[in-house]
Image (tube, rainbow, N blue to C red; front, side, top):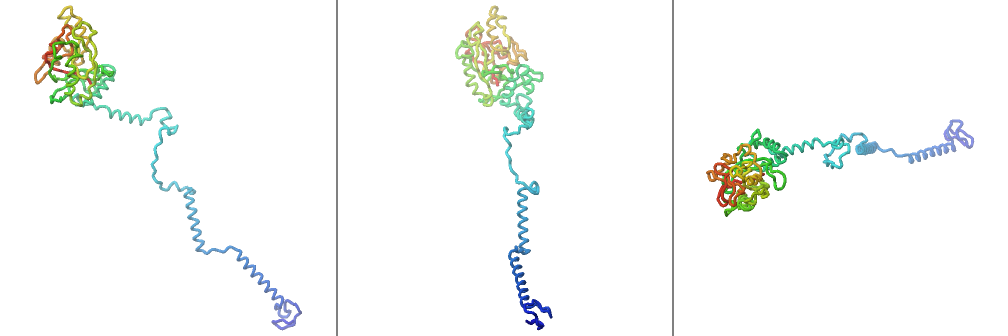
Length: 389
């Protein structure tokens, strides 16, 4: 065979021309076959290898990955930044007392919370009656509250100390007749009431009534009974019925609402020599007994020798009120503190005490303030009630 390039004769089956070195027949085909094989392997390798994304696609994918990572990071506080983010305000209910931690201040030493104690003290101070200059300045509701405080004091001296605090007596604890309050009756009558004692009367419901008053004038004029008799004493008298019905109706509502029933001791027989005739009635309005006005009575022993048993009956009808002790009322003479007016003129007024030696008489205070007077039960005289709050 001959070389296709230089024409030199070469041996049959030679791969190269020995003259020019050109590749001959079967060698060229082998080389081509080898080249084709390499190209096919490269194509197959390219087909099996992952395709490379474009720069734009890579950028979008990277951004998506970052967003996902950030969201997951904040949600799980990976980066420690959740604490600085604004939080929505939420009202959290206070725990119930039973839910308080066992180590709280309130339980740790067994002492009361000081803030709670201060609040209670403040409420108590606010509820207390403000001190005013005189009896006149207080409302009846305030006087009722003060009366309760006086009643709870425990003794007469302690009661007077409370009264001094509220200016209900003189600075040295006396009643001098100036402790008065104005009252307008339902019929338009202008009058006053006057403090006569502190923690003196027993309330029917129990305990003491803190303040007791007497009217400064006669509120009406009437007989003790429709007939000339003292039988049944104060308990059965027409006067008692009047005071606890029509008499109460004369009072202004703010006063009537704070009056408390008290127990009064009186001879409720009439003519008697026995102290056992003295018994208790419960009254809101009542008249004063002879001994409540002037203390111990010895009128019968002094003027009617041999009749001292009657004095014992009168002396069992209660004890003298503070104002009459402080001003030293004379039981057998005139006393200015006992003078009362009606329609502008001084008038004698009833005591609730029957005269135990007689069947028709009740005790009375004369128009000049003498408490040893007496009169027939059916005779009209002034009415000067007492009451307690």
